Image 1 (cartoon, chains in turn blue, brown):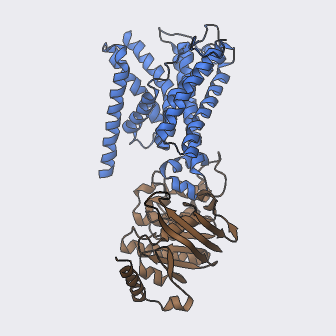
Image 2 (cartoon, rainbow over the protein chains, first blue to last red):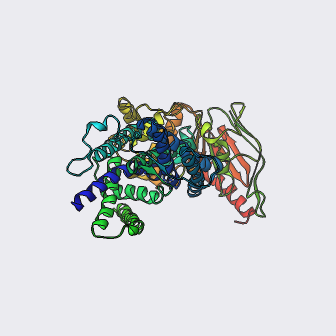
Image 3 (cartoon, rainbow over the protein chains, first blue to last red):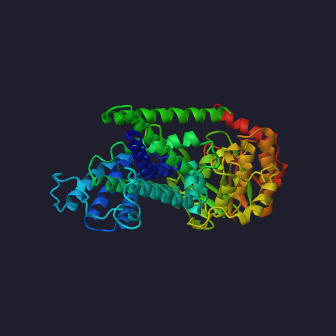
Length: 310
Length: 257
Protein backbone atom coordinates (compact mmCIF):
# COMPACT_ATOMS: atom_id res chain seq x y z
CA UNK A 1 0.00 0.00 0.00
CA UNK A 2 2.97 2.28 0.62
CA UNK A 3 3.85 2.04 -3.05
CA UNK A 4 0.33 2.88 -4.15
CA UNK A 5 0.14 5.94 -1.94
CA UNK A 6 3.59 7.04 -3.08
CA UNK A 7 2.47 6.68 -6.68
CA UNK A 8 -0.57 8.78 -5.91
CA UNK A 9 1.56 11.53 -4.39
CA UNK A 10 3.95 11.42 -7.37
CA UNK A 11 1.13 11.86 -9.85
CA UNK A 12 -0.60 14.56 -7.83
CA UNK A 13 2.58 16.56 -7.33
CA UNK A 14 3.62 15.79 -10.87
CA UNK A 15 0.46 17.37 -12.28
CA UNK A 16 0.53 20.39 -9.96
CA UNK A 17 4.19 21.14 -10.63
CA UNK A 18 3.64 20.48 -14.33
CA UNK A 19 1.72 23.78 -14.43
CA UNK A 20 4.69 25.51 -12.86
CA UNK A 21 6.99 23.68 -15.28
CA UNK A 22 4.90 24.81 -18.27
CA UNK A 23 5.51 28.34 -17.03
CA UNK A 24 9.22 27.62 -17.06
CA UNK A 25 8.85 26.14 -20.51
CA UNK A 26 7.77 29.61 -21.66
CA UNK A 27 10.40 31.61 -19.79
CA UNK A 28 13.35 29.23 -19.64
CA UNK A 29 12.93 27.20 -22.79
CA UNK A 30 11.25 29.55 -25.25
CA UNK A 31 12.58 32.90 -24.04
CA UNK A 32 15.87 31.58 -22.64
CA UNK A 33 15.25 33.63 -19.49
CA UNK A 34 16.21 31.99 -16.16
CA UNK A 35 13.37 33.44 -14.11
CA UNK A 36 14.01 33.41 -10.38
CA UNK A 37 10.95 35.49 -9.50
CA UNK A 38 8.91 32.27 -9.55
CA UNK A 39 10.06 31.47 -6.02
CA UNK A 40 7.97 34.44 -4.93
CA UNK A 41 5.07 34.10 -7.35
CA UNK A 42 4.25 30.50 -6.42
CA UNK A 43 3.65 31.66 -2.88
CA UNK A 44 1.84 34.79 -4.03
CA UNK A 45 -0.56 32.55 -5.93
CA UNK A 46 -0.96 30.34 -2.86
CA UNK A 47 -1.60 33.25 -0.51
CA UNK A 48 -4.02 34.91 -2.93
CA UNK A 49 -6.01 31.74 -3.31
CA UNK A 50 -6.01 30.93 0.41
CA UNK A 51 -7.07 34.45 1.43
CA UNK A 52 -9.85 34.46 -1.16
CA UNK A 53 -11.00 31.01 -0.07
CA UNK A 54 -11.27 32.27 3.48
CA UNK A 55 -13.40 35.13 2.18
CA UNK A 56 -15.69 32.55 0.61
CA UNK A 57 -14.80 33.34 -3.01
CA UNK A 58 -15.40 30.62 -5.57
CA UNK A 59 -12.11 28.69 -5.98
CA UNK A 60 -12.10 29.03 -9.76
CA UNK A 61 -12.43 32.80 -9.49
CA UNK A 62 -9.69 32.71 -6.84
CA UNK A 63 -7.43 30.72 -9.15
CA UNK A 64 -7.97 33.07 -12.05
CA UNK A 65 -7.16 36.02 -9.78
CA UNK A 66 -4.05 34.22 -8.54
CA UNK A 67 -3.03 33.75 -12.18
CA UNK A 68 -3.60 37.43 -12.93
CA UNK A 69 -1.58 38.56 -9.90
CA UNK A 70 1.19 36.16 -10.93
CA UNK A 71 1.12 37.75 -14.38
CA UNK A 72 1.51 41.19 -12.82
CA UNK A 73 4.51 40.07 -10.76
CA UNK A 74 6.03 38.52 -13.88
CA UNK A 75 5.58 41.74 -15.82
CA UNK A 76 7.50 43.55 -13.10
CA UNK A 77 10.41 41.14 -13.65
CA UNK A 78 10.11 41.79 -17.37
CA UNK A 79 9.96 45.57 -16.95
CA UNK A 80 13.01 45.57 -14.67
CA UNK A 81 14.93 43.64 -17.30
CA UNK A 82 13.65 45.33 -20.46
CA UNK A 83 13.16 48.93 -19.39
CA UNK A 84 15.87 49.29 -16.76
CA UNK A 85 18.36 46.91 -18.37
CA UNK A 86 18.79 44.78 -15.22
CA UNK A 87 20.14 41.30 -15.91
CA UNK A 88 17.63 38.42 -15.96
CA UNK A 89 18.91 36.69 -12.81
CA UNK A 90 18.97 39.92 -10.82
CA UNK A 91 15.53 41.01 -12.04
CA UNK A 92 14.14 37.71 -10.76
CA UNK A 93 15.93 38.00 -7.42
CA UNK A 94 14.64 41.56 -6.96
CA UNK A 95 11.05 40.55 -7.61
CA UNK A 96 11.13 37.41 -5.48
CA UNK A 97 12.73 39.39 -2.63
CA UNK A 98 10.13 42.13 -2.89
CA UNK A 99 7.37 39.55 -2.98
CA UNK A 100 8.45 38.19 0.42
CA UNK A 101 7.05 41.38 1.98
CA UNK A 102 4.02 41.40 -0.28
CA UNK A 103 3.23 37.80 0.64
CA UNK A 104 3.71 38.43 4.37
CA UNK A 105 1.50 41.51 4.37
CA UNK A 106 -1.12 39.77 2.24
CA UNK A 107 -1.10 36.79 4.61
CA UNK A 108 -1.36 38.95 7.73
CA UNK A 109 -4.10 41.12 6.28
CA UNK A 110 -5.84 38.05 4.94
CA UNK A 111 -5.93 36.71 8.46
CA UNK A 112 -7.66 39.85 9.61
CA UNK A 113 -4.51 41.38 11.10
CA UNK A 114 -3.16 44.90 10.69
CA UNK A 115 -0.25 46.25 8.64
CA UNK A 116 2.08 46.21 11.66
CA UNK A 117 4.04 43.63 9.69
CA UNK A 118 5.66 41.75 12.57
CA UNK A 119 5.16 38.52 10.68
CA UNK A 120 2.72 36.99 13.13
CA UNK A 121 0.18 34.67 11.52
CA UNK A 122 2.18 34.58 8.32
CA UNK A 123 0.48 31.34 7.34
CA UNK A 124 -2.97 31.41 5.85
CA UNK A 125 -4.94 28.31 6.69
CA UNK A 126 -7.88 27.32 4.54
CA UNK A 127 -10.62 26.17 6.89
CA UNK A 128 -12.32 22.83 6.24
CA UNK A 129 -15.51 24.70 5.44
CA UNK A 130 -13.98 27.16 2.97
CA UNK A 131 -14.49 26.59 -0.74
CA UNK A 132 -11.73 24.82 -2.65
CA UNK A 133 -11.92 22.97 -5.95
CA UNK A 134 -12.36 19.76 -3.94
CA UNK A 135 -15.53 21.10 -2.34
CA UNK A 136 -17.37 22.73 -5.25
CA UNK A 137 -18.82 21.62 -8.56
CA UNK A 138 -17.72 19.87 -10.80
CA UNK A 139 -15.17 17.72 -8.96
CA UNK A 140 -17.61 17.01 -6.14
CA UNK A 141 -19.32 14.69 -8.63
CA UNK A 142 -16.42 12.31 -8.10
CA UNK A 143 -16.13 10.13 -5.01
CA UNK A 144 -13.51 11.58 -2.70
CA UNK A 145 -11.55 8.38 -2.26
CA UNK A 146 -11.55 5.06 -4.03
CA UNK A 147 -9.56 2.22 -2.51
CA UNK A 148 -7.78 4.71 -0.24
CA UNK A 149 -6.63 6.75 -3.24
CA UNK A 150 -7.70 10.37 -3.16
CA UNK A 151 -9.37 10.14 -6.56
CA UNK A 152 -10.96 13.56 -6.47
CA UNK A 153 -7.68 15.34 -5.89
CA UNK A 154 -5.82 13.25 -8.45
CA UNK A 155 -8.41 13.74 -11.19
CA UNK A 156 -8.90 17.44 -10.52
CA UNK A 157 -5.15 18.12 -10.71
CA UNK A 158 -4.91 16.08 -13.87
CA UNK A 159 -7.82 17.88 -15.51
CA UNK A 160 -6.52 21.33 -14.59
CA UNK A 161 -3.00 20.51 -15.84
CA UNK A 162 -4.55 19.22 -19.05
CA UNK A 163 -6.65 22.34 -19.54
CA UNK A 164 -3.60 24.54 -19.00
CA UNK A 165 -1.66 22.41 -21.48
CA UNK A 166 -4.36 22.64 -24.16
CA UNK A 167 -4.74 26.39 -23.71
CA UNK A 168 -0.98 26.87 -23.86
CA UNK A 169 -0.72 24.70 -26.99
CA UNK A 170 -3.42 26.77 -28.64
CA UNK A 171 -1.76 30.01 -27.60
CA UNK A 172 1.65 28.98 -28.88
CA UNK A 173 0.14 28.44 -32.32
CA UNK A 174 -1.17 31.98 -32.54
CA UNK A 175 0.71 34.89 -34.06
CA UNK A 176 1.51 36.18 -30.60
CA UNK A 177 2.80 32.74 -29.55
CA UNK A 178 4.92 32.39 -32.66
CA UNK A 179 6.40 35.82 -31.98
CA UNK A 180 7.37 34.57 -28.51
CA UNK A 181 9.39 31.76 -30.11
CA UNK A 182 10.98 34.24 -32.53
CA UNK A 183 11.95 36.59 -29.69
CA UNK A 184 13.56 33.80 -27.69
CA UNK A 185 15.36 32.44 -30.72
CA UNK A 186 16.51 35.68 -32.31
CA UNK A 187 15.39 38.99 -30.82
CA UNK A 188 16.76 40.81 -33.86
CA UNK A 189 14.22 38.96 -35.99
CA UNK A 190 11.39 40.34 -33.87
CA UNK A 191 12.87 43.81 -34.26
CA UNK A 192 12.93 43.31 -38.03
CA UNK A 193 9.23 42.47 -37.87
CA UNK A 194 8.74 45.99 -36.52
CA UNK A 195 7.82 44.60 -33.09
CA UNK A 196 9.50 45.44 -29.81
CA UNK A 197 11.17 42.23 -28.56
CA UNK A 198 11.01 43.72 -25.06
CA UNK A 199 7.20 43.63 -25.05
CA UNK A 200 7.26 40.04 -26.18
CA UNK A 201 9.62 39.15 -23.32
CA UNK A 202 7.43 40.92 -20.77
CA UNK A 203 4.40 39.03 -22.06
CA UNK A 204 6.23 35.69 -21.79
CA UNK A 205 7.38 36.42 -18.24
CA UNK A 206 3.87 37.45 -17.28
CA UNK A 207 2.47 34.15 -18.58
CA UNK A 208 5.23 32.11 -16.95
CA UNK A 209 4.65 33.68 -13.55
CA UNK A 210 0.90 33.50 -13.97
CA UNK A 211 1.21 29.74 -14.37
CA UNK A 212 3.56 29.57 -11.37
CA UNK A 213 0.97 31.40 -9.27
CA UNK A 214 -1.77 29.10 -10.53
CA UNK A 215 0.29 26.11 -9.49
CA UNK A 216 0.80 27.76 -6.08
CA UNK A 217 -2.96 28.24 -5.78
CA UNK A 218 -3.48 24.51 -6.30
CA UNK A 219 -0.78 23.59 -3.81
CA UNK A 220 -2.38 25.82 -1.18
CA UNK A 221 -5.79 24.21 -1.74
CA UNK A 222 -4.30 20.75 -1.61
CA UNK A 223 -2.31 21.37 1.59
CA UNK A 224 -5.00 23.46 3.18
CA UNK A 225 -2.65 26.37 3.79
CA UNK A 226 -0.18 28.76 2.25
CA UNK A 227 2.97 29.14 4.30
CA UNK A 228 5.99 31.32 3.72
CA UNK A 229 8.27 28.39 2.91
CA UNK A 230 6.17 27.24 -0.03
CA UNK A 231 8.25 28.88 -2.73
CA UNK A 232 11.52 27.26 -1.72
CA UNK A 233 12.98 24.93 -4.31
CA UNK A 234 10.33 25.77 -6.91
CA UNK A 235 12.89 26.95 -9.45
CA UNK A 236 14.74 23.67 -9.32
CA UNK A 237 11.51 21.64 -9.54
CA UNK A 238 10.27 23.68 -12.49
CA UNK A 239 13.42 23.89 -14.55
CA UNK A 240 14.46 20.30 -13.83
CA UNK A 241 11.03 19.05 -14.96
CA UNK A 242 11.33 21.01 -18.21
CA UNK A 243 14.83 19.75 -18.89
CA UNK A 244 14.02 16.14 -18.01
CA UNK A 245 10.89 16.18 -20.15
CA UNK A 246 12.50 17.81 -23.16
CA UNK A 247 15.67 15.72 -23.04
CA UNK A 248 13.96 12.35 -22.48
CA UNK A 249 11.19 12.81 -25.04
CA UNK A 250 12.74 15.48 -27.25
CA UNK A 251 13.25 13.12 -30.17
CA UNK A 252 9.60 12.11 -30.41
CA UNK A 253 8.31 14.35 -33.16
CA UNK A 254 4.64 13.58 -32.60
CA UNK A 255 4.75 14.72 -28.98
CA UNK A 256 4.10 18.34 -28.08
CA UNK A 257 6.69 20.02 -25.84
CA UNK A 258 3.99 20.75 -23.25
CA UNK A 259 3.25 17.01 -23.00
CA UNK A 260 6.96 16.36 -22.56
CA UNK A 261 7.08 18.91 -19.76
CA UNK A 262 4.15 17.28 -17.93
CA UNK A 263 5.79 13.87 -18.23
CA UNK A 264 9.09 15.39 -17.11
CA UNK A 265 7.39 16.75 -14.03
CA UNK A 266 5.87 13.35 -13.20
CA UNK A 267 9.23 11.62 -13.71
CA UNK A 268 10.90 14.14 -11.44
CA UNK A 269 8.35 13.55 -8.68
CA UNK A 270 8.64 9.80 -9.24
CA UNK A 271 12.37 9.99 -8.56
CA UNK A 272 11.62 11.70 -5.25
CA UNK A 273 8.98 9.04 -4.58
CA UNK A 274 11.45 6.23 -5.19
CA UNK A 275 13.82 7.88 -2.73
CA UNK A 276 11.11 7.95 -0.09
CA UNK A 277 10.18 4.28 -0.71
CA UNK A 278 13.84 3.41 -0.30
CA UNK A 279 13.58 5.02 3.10
CA UNK A 280 15.57 8.20 2.48
CA UNK A 281 14.41 10.76 5.09
CA UNK A 282 12.52 13.71 3.63
CA UNK A 283 15.16 16.08 4.99
CA UNK A 284 17.32 14.86 2.13
CA UNK A 285 14.74 15.84 -0.47
CA UNK A 286 16.27 19.18 -1.40
CA UNK A 287 19.69 17.58 -1.83
CA UNK A 288 18.17 14.89 -4.01
CA UNK A 289 16.43 17.62 -6.01
CA UNK A 290 19.72 19.41 -6.59
CA UNK A 291 21.36 16.15 -7.67
CA UNK A 292 18.48 15.32 -10.02
CA UNK A 293 18.71 18.80 -11.48
CA UNK A 294 22.44 18.38 -12.05
CA UNK A 295 21.80 15.02 -13.71
CA UNK A 296 19.14 16.56 -15.94
CA UNK A 297 21.45 19.40 -16.96
CA UNK A 298 24.28 17.00 -17.79
CA UNK A 299 21.93 14.71 -19.69
CA UNK A 300 20.49 17.53 -21.80
CA UNK A 301 23.98 18.93 -22.37
CA UNK A 302 25.12 15.59 -23.70
CA UNK A 303 22.14 15.28 -26.00
CA UNK A 304 22.84 18.80 -27.22
CA UNK A 305 26.43 17.94 -28.07
CA UNK A 306 25.39 14.78 -29.89
CA UNK A 307 23.04 16.84 -32.01
CA UNK A 308 25.86 19.17 -32.96
CA UNK A 309 28.15 16.29 -33.86
CA UNK A 310 25.54 14.74 -36.12
CA UNK B 1 15.01 60.34 -49.37
CA UNK B 2 17.56 59.50 -46.68
CA UNK B 3 19.80 62.12 -45.22
CA UNK B 4 22.38 61.98 -42.45
CA UNK B 5 22.85 65.55 -41.28
CA UNK B 6 25.92 66.66 -39.36
CA UNK B 7 26.24 63.38 -37.52
CA UNK B 8 28.69 63.07 -34.66
CA UNK B 9 29.18 59.66 -33.11
CA UNK B 10 31.65 58.86 -30.36
CA UNK B 11 32.46 55.50 -28.85
CA UNK B 12 33.56 54.75 -25.28
CA UNK B 13 32.21 58.16 -24.43
CA UNK B 14 33.53 59.70 -21.24
CA UNK B 15 36.44 57.26 -20.88
CA UNK B 16 40.13 57.83 -21.69
CA UNK B 17 39.58 55.58 -24.73
CA UNK B 18 36.96 57.85 -26.24
CA UNK B 19 37.16 57.84 -30.03
CA UNK B 20 35.23 59.98 -32.45
CA UNK B 21 34.22 58.01 -35.51
CA UNK B 22 31.95 60.55 -37.17
CA UNK B 23 32.63 64.24 -36.80
CA UNK B 24 29.88 66.25 -38.49
CA UNK B 25 29.35 63.56 -41.10
CA UNK B 26 26.88 64.17 -43.92
CA UNK B 27 25.52 61.63 -46.37
CA UNK B 28 22.41 61.32 -48.47
CA UNK B 29 20.72 58.74 -50.65
CA UNK B 30 18.23 59.49 -53.43
CA UNK B 31 15.05 57.52 -53.97
CA UNK B 32 15.61 54.51 -56.23
CA UNK B 33 19.39 54.49 -55.75
CA UNK B 34 21.31 51.29 -55.22
CA UNK B 35 24.42 52.43 -53.39
CA UNK B 36 27.42 50.19 -52.73
CA UNK B 37 29.63 51.21 -49.84
CA UNK B 38 33.21 49.96 -49.47
CA UNK B 39 35.95 50.79 -47.02
CA UNK B 40 38.44 49.22 -44.64
CA UNK B 41 37.50 47.88 -41.21
CA UNK B 42 36.72 50.66 -38.80
CA UNK B 43 35.95 53.14 -41.57
CA UNK B 44 32.39 53.60 -40.28
CA UNK B 45 30.36 51.64 -42.84
CA UNK B 46 28.51 49.44 -40.40
CA UNK B 47 28.16 52.25 -37.87
CA UNK B 48 26.50 54.30 -40.58
CA UNK B 49 24.03 51.47 -41.19
CA UNK B 50 23.43 51.15 -37.45
CA UNK B 51 22.67 54.86 -37.25
CA UNK B 52 20.22 54.58 -40.15
CA UNK B 53 18.49 51.51 -38.70
CA UNK B 54 18.39 52.87 -35.17
CA UNK B 55 20.70 50.34 -33.51
CA UNK B 56 22.73 53.37 -32.41
CA UNK B 57 21.64 56.92 -31.83
CA UNK B 58 23.87 59.77 -32.97
CA UNK B 59 25.48 61.98 -30.30
CA UNK B 60 24.74 64.97 -32.49
CA UNK B 61 23.00 65.53 -35.79
CA UNK B 62 19.90 64.14 -37.41
CA UNK B 63 18.78 61.21 -39.49
CA UNK B 64 16.11 62.37 -41.92
CA UNK B 65 13.91 59.93 -43.78
CA UNK B 66 11.64 61.37 -46.45
CA UNK B 67 12.06 64.70 -44.74
CA UNK B 68 11.06 63.41 -41.30
CA UNK B 69 13.49 63.33 -38.40
CA UNK B 70 13.78 59.71 -37.27
CA UNK B 71 16.86 60.14 -35.06
CA UNK B 72 14.99 59.20 -31.88
CA UNK B 73 12.73 56.55 -33.37
CA UNK B 74 13.55 53.12 -31.86
CA UNK B 75 14.98 50.45 -34.14
CA UNK B 76 11.85 48.29 -34.20
CA UNK B 77 9.71 51.19 -35.35
CA UNK B 78 12.10 52.06 -38.15
CA UNK B 79 11.96 48.40 -39.22
CA UNK B 80 8.42 49.09 -40.45
CA UNK B 81 9.92 50.76 -43.52
CA UNK B 82 13.59 49.77 -43.41
CA UNK B 83 14.58 46.16 -44.09
CA UNK B 84 17.97 44.76 -43.19
CA UNK B 85 19.97 41.69 -44.12
CA UNK B 86 23.00 40.98 -41.95
CA UNK B 87 26.39 39.43 -42.57
CA UNK B 88 25.51 36.55 -40.28
CA UNK B 89 22.96 34.33 -42.05
CA UNK B 90 21.63 33.36 -38.59
CA UNK B 91 20.60 36.95 -37.85
CA UNK B 92 17.83 37.25 -40.41
CA UNK B 93 15.86 34.10 -39.58
CA UNK B 94 14.87 31.95 -36.58
CA UNK B 95 16.66 28.60 -36.51
CA UNK B 96 14.20 26.82 -34.21
CA UNK B 97 11.23 27.67 -36.39
CA UNK B 98 10.39 26.11 -39.75
CA UNK B 99 10.73 27.93 -43.06
CA UNK B 100 6.95 28.15 -43.10
CA UNK B 101 6.77 29.70 -39.63
CA UNK B 102 9.53 32.17 -40.46
CA UNK B 103 7.70 33.26 -43.59
CA UNK B 104 4.32 33.38 -41.84
CA UNK B 105 5.78 35.73 -39.22
CA UNK B 106 7.32 37.93 -41.89
CA UNK B 107 4.03 37.88 -43.80
CA UNK B 108 2.36 39.43 -40.76
CA UNK B 109 4.85 42.27 -40.44
CA UNK B 110 3.32 45.68 -39.73
CA UNK B 111 0.09 43.99 -38.61
CA UNK B 112 -0.84 43.15 -35.03
CA UNK B 113 0.47 39.86 -33.64
CA UNK B 114 -2.68 38.84 -31.83
CA UNK B 115 -4.45 35.60 -31.11
CA UNK B 116 -5.17 34.72 -34.73
CA UNK B 117 -3.73 31.55 -36.19
CA UNK B 118 0.03 31.95 -36.59
CA UNK B 119 0.39 30.07 -39.87
CA UNK B 120 -2.13 30.55 -42.65
CA UNK B 121 -1.93 27.45 -44.87
CA UNK B 122 -3.65 29.26 -47.71
CA UNK B 123 -0.55 31.39 -48.14
CA UNK B 124 1.72 28.37 -48.62
CA UNK B 125 1.59 28.49 -52.42
CA UNK B 126 2.61 32.12 -52.32
CA UNK B 127 5.55 31.30 -50.02
CA UNK B 128 6.58 28.47 -52.34
CA UNK B 129 6.55 30.77 -55.35
CA UNK B 130 8.81 33.23 -53.52
CA UNK B 131 11.23 30.43 -52.63
CA UNK B 132 11.22 29.04 -56.17
CA UNK B 133 12.71 32.34 -57.32
CA UNK B 134 15.78 31.60 -55.19
CA UNK B 135 16.50 28.34 -57.01
CA UNK B 136 17.84 26.76 -53.86
CA UNK B 137 15.39 23.92 -53.47
CA UNK B 138 13.71 25.43 -50.42
CA UNK B 139 10.22 25.47 -51.93
CA UNK B 140 9.68 21.80 -51.06
CA UNK B 141 11.04 22.08 -47.55
CA UNK B 142 8.57 24.45 -45.93
CA UNK B 143 8.35 22.24 -42.82
CA UNK B 144 12.12 22.08 -42.37
CA UNK B 145 13.61 23.95 -39.45
CA UNK B 146 15.70 26.85 -40.69
CA UNK B 147 18.60 25.69 -38.50
CA UNK B 148 19.03 22.74 -40.88
CA UNK B 149 19.62 24.94 -43.93
CA UNK B 150 23.01 25.92 -45.33
CA UNK B 151 24.35 29.45 -44.88
CA UNK B 152 23.54 30.30 -48.49
CA UNK B 153 19.96 29.04 -48.21
CA UNK B 154 19.45 30.89 -44.94
CA UNK B 155 20.74 34.10 -46.42
CA UNK B 156 18.48 33.69 -49.46
CA UNK B 157 15.57 33.13 -47.08
CA UNK B 158 16.55 36.17 -45.03
CA UNK B 159 16.59 38.22 -48.21
CA UNK B 160 13.18 36.96 -49.31
CA UNK B 161 11.77 37.53 -45.82
CA UNK B 162 13.12 41.08 -45.66
CA UNK B 163 11.39 41.82 -48.97
CA UNK B 164 8.04 40.20 -48.19
CA UNK B 165 6.43 43.39 -47.02
CA UNK B 166 6.73 46.65 -48.85
CA UNK B 167 9.83 48.49 -47.76
CA UNK B 168 11.17 51.90 -48.55
CA UNK B 169 14.81 51.15 -47.90
CA UNK B 170 16.78 47.91 -47.96
CA UNK B 171 20.00 47.73 -45.96
CA UNK B 172 22.49 45.02 -46.91
CA UNK B 173 25.17 44.72 -44.27
CA UNK B 174 28.01 42.69 -45.86
CA UNK B 175 25.35 40.13 -46.55
CA UNK B 176 27.51 37.94 -48.78
CA UNK B 177 30.66 38.08 -46.64
CA UNK B 178 30.06 34.88 -44.66
CA UNK B 179 29.28 32.74 -47.70
CA UNK B 180 31.45 30.66 -50.04
CA UNK B 181 32.28 32.28 -53.41
CA UNK B 182 29.58 30.45 -55.32
CA UNK B 183 26.82 31.10 -52.78
CA UNK B 184 27.81 34.70 -52.41
CA UNK B 185 27.58 35.11 -56.19
CA UNK B 186 24.09 33.58 -56.19
CA UNK B 187 22.91 35.69 -53.29
CA UNK B 188 24.27 38.81 -55.00
CA UNK B 189 22.40 37.98 -58.22
CA UNK B 190 19.22 37.29 -56.25
CA UNK B 191 19.66 40.59 -54.41
CA UNK B 192 20.10 42.47 -57.66
CA UNK B 193 17.00 40.87 -59.14
CA UNK B 194 14.86 41.64 -56.09
CA UNK B 195 16.02 45.24 -56.08
CA UNK B 196 15.38 45.66 -59.81
CA UNK B 197 11.93 44.08 -59.59
CA UNK B 198 10.75 46.22 -56.71
CA UNK B 199 12.70 49.35 -57.59
CA UNK B 200 13.49 49.74 -53.90
CA UNK B 201 16.19 52.08 -52.63
CA UNK B 202 19.12 50.02 -51.35
CA UNK B 203 22.32 50.58 -49.43
CA UNK B 204 24.85 47.77 -49.57
CA UNK B 205 28.05 47.56 -47.56
CA UNK B 206 30.49 45.07 -49.02
CA UNK B 207 34.13 44.05 -48.91
CA UNK B 208 33.82 42.57 -52.37
CA UNK B 209 35.12 45.32 -54.64
CA UNK B 210 33.91 43.50 -57.74
CA UNK B 211 30.33 43.40 -56.43
CA UNK B 212 30.61 47.09 -55.58
CA UNK B 213 31.68 47.84 -59.15
CA UNK B 214 29.26 45.50 -60.92
CA UNK B 215 26.09 46.21 -59.00
CA UNK B 216 24.26 49.38 -58.14
CA UNK B 217 24.30 52.84 -59.64
CA UNK B 218 26.43 54.60 -57.05
CA UNK B 219 29.67 53.68 -55.35
CA UNK B 220 30.95 55.18 -52.11
CA UNK B 221 34.23 54.55 -50.36
CA UNK B 222 34.55 55.44 -46.68
CA UNK B 223 37.61 56.01 -44.58
CA UNK B 224 37.93 57.14 -40.96
CA UNK B 225 34.34 58.31 -40.81
CA UNK B 226 34.43 60.22 -44.08
CA UNK B 227 33.39 59.64 -47.65
CA UNK B 228 36.60 59.65 -49.68
CA UNK B 229 35.16 58.57 -53.01
CA UNK B 230 31.66 58.94 -54.42
CA UNK B 231 30.95 57.88 -58.00
CA UNK B 232 27.57 57.79 -59.69
CA UNK B 233 26.20 57.36 -63.20
CA UNK B 234 28.80 57.18 -66.00
CA UNK B 235 31.65 57.67 -63.54
CA UNK B 236 30.54 54.60 -61.67
CA UNK B 237 30.12 52.53 -64.84
CA UNK B 238 33.66 53.31 -65.92
CA UNK B 239 35.21 52.49 -62.56
CA UNK B 240 37.28 49.33 -62.27
CA UNK B 241 38.45 47.18 -59.39
CA UNK B 242 42.00 48.39 -60.04
CA UNK B 243 40.97 52.04 -59.65
CA UNK B 244 39.35 51.21 -56.36
CA UNK B 245 42.35 49.26 -55.16
CA UNK B 246 44.64 52.17 -55.97
CA UNK B 247 42.58 54.50 -53.78
CA UNK B 248 42.27 51.81 -51.14
CA UNK B 249 46.04 51.29 -51.00
CA UNK B 250 46.90 54.96 -50.87
CA UNK B 251 44.55 55.36 -47.90
CA UNK B 252 45.99 52.33 -46.19
CA UNK B 253 49.54 53.66 -46.53
CA UNK B 254 48.40 56.99 -45.14
CA UNK B 255 46.92 55.42 -42.05
CA UNK B 256 49.93 53.15 -41.63
CA UNK B 257 48.31 49.82 -42.39
